[in-house]
Amino acid sequence: MLRRRRGTMLDLRRENRAAVLWSLYFSRPGSRQDLSAATGLSTTSVTNVVRELIDDGIVIEVGSEESDGGRPRMLLDINPNHRYAIGVDVGETRIRVELFDLAMTPRAKAEYPLNPAEHDVDTVVQGIVSGLNAVLTDGGVDPAAVLGVGVGVPGLVEQGPEALVHGQTYGWDAVPLERLLRAHTGLPLRFENCVKNMGQAELWFGAARGAENAVVVLVGSGVGASLISGGAACQEATSSAIEWGHTTIVVGGRRCRCGSLGCLEAYVGAEAILDRCGKPAALAADDEESMLAAHIAGARSSPTTGAVLAETAEYLGVGIGNLINLFNPERVILGGWAGLLLGGRLLPEIRESARRNSLRQPFAGVSIELGQLGQEAVALGAATLPIEDFLNGAARPPLY
Ligand SMILES: [Zn+2]
Image 1 (cartoon, rainbow, N blue to C red):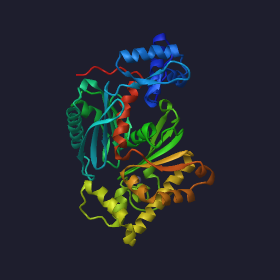
Image 2 (tube, helix red, strand yellow):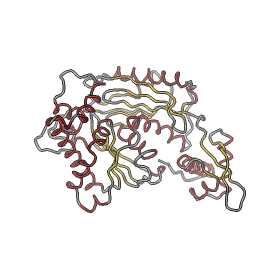
Image 3 (cartoon, rainbow, N blue to C red):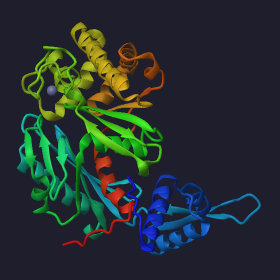
Image 4 (cartoon, protein in one colour):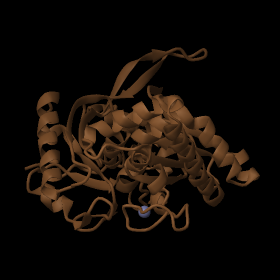
């Protein structure tokens, strides 16, 4: 989100620079005239800002386009190699660390499996630190060129002098993740809820792009949602994570990991689906995904699995119907690894259930779509956190 400053000439210059950078970042490549039209700044102001950005190595000229009756216009783009950002996805079953260039092209990636039944803090910290070192080495990138590291976590993030993570179903209570990582890296760190990260990735680059109001839902082992408003212009967007997975869907229903009965997650979360299909007692983390994929593929030949999946689509539709009635979004995006698997096969049934379980008027204005960024969405979204600071003009703190 663009943070507007008001005050001195210096503030105004910084604000103009941020406006041009945000605009160019989402409409690449573009001419100075395009930037002037998009930002409302005069072409003189845009030309001055662009000169500064080219001098700083942030913007490059990438060719020209014909203009009606005039001189060809130079096209500008972000220099992808100017800086880099790292996104970390601390999931239920794995830690994923990815290095992106400034244009968000993935440059290196590392993954470490986690036991879904045990999320030991030291193991997670070690995984993240190993991942940071691996992607910097594999990507051949100098740490001084990295804007920062965004970390997506399954839980609430208490932002403060140092970020604390509260993840009730993850077994984390006020974990000082920032302090623990700070002992191992000098890179700037940002922390955010993983569902918010996925929402921001889909808003910037995926299925929520251009939507003013959207709800992005993540269905994996856990279930959550991110509400986006003001999304038509990414720099003005705000979002919040909601604990959608722990809203009661069946009074006195199945026991949820949070301790309550009948939560949505206890019906549509991956483990809940596998449990009802008949999960082998010892199932490795990495196998959950292939197991669910196999169940979905073989549903027609197994009445039990078919019934469980039909019930899951029904409950997921009820949950989405509730979101539609409560928030009246123009788009609902279904993502997360289990959400993408379920939606790939059952999206028509899920839509039909949402239709039956919401009011006609708000349902008529909503589209229910699959996420477009796959399982990389959380890491990508986490990496947008330092990018966001960069577009707003934040100076990178000195390293080491
Ligand atoms: Zn619950």
